[in-house]
Structure formats: structure tokens, C-alpha cells
Amino acid sequence: MDKITKEQRSKLMSGVKSKNTLPELTVRQFLFNKGFRYRLHSKKLPGKPDLTLTKYKTTVFINGCFWHGHGCKKSKLPSTNTKFWNKKINGNIERDKKVYKELENLGWKVLLIWECDLKNETTLKDLIKKIRNT
Ligand SMILES: [Zn+2]
Image (cartoon, rainbow, N blue to C red; front, side):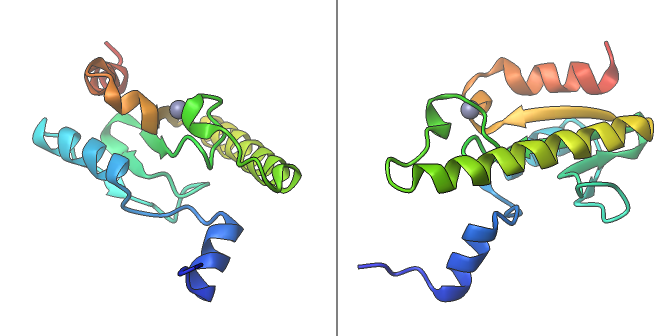
């Protein structure tokens, strides 16, 4: 039985970036505890980056492996409607690339955190190094 509502489905299908996901909250909490302050989903910037650290002229995207086509195990396409999903995810990848490029052209540093990377303890420490450019 399909319990998903019509609204949820259309949101899911349109690939709207879901906000406040667990990986996102994990990164936010870590950075906040380390004293970093950031804006969330700033509408002023291309792609509404998950985090914007104005002080460091840095944006951080926390990407779900499936939706953003990471290519890891977690991002494996469903075995049904493969063609549809392929197109969908490839579209997302293209859009992401465009957004990152736009941000870089505006002088912003773009940092990516993948959902699956969060299993690795060094990921968040490395993120801080990258933000500080050390
Ligand atoms: Zn991944």
C-alpha cells in the first residue's frame, strides 16, 4: 500500500531539495558547536546553499547521495523506471554543476558534504580546515 500523499509525491518527484535533513542537521550542529555562524538556505545566492558562511565567503552544500547522484552505493537507481530516474538524477547533477559554477564566479567557495561521507569521522574536521583554508 502506497501511503505517500499526493503532495508528498509531487514534492518527491519534482526533486525539490528537502530542507533540514538529518545529514544537514549533523553538519550544522557540528559547525555551530565549533563557533561557526552561518545563514541557512540564503535566497540571495544561486541554488540557496544549505549553509552560507559570509565571514569565510564560503557556501556548504550537504547533498543526499541519491538525489544528487553521488555515484556511491547509496545512490544506486531503483531497478524500475530506471530511465526516468536516470534522467531525473542527471538533471539534478547538471543543475548542481551550474549552481556551483555561478557561486564560484561570484567569488564564493563551494564545499560539498555527501551524506555517506558523514560516516567518516574526519569529514567534519576536514570541512573546518577547508572553511578556514588551512
Ligand atoms: Zn554517497
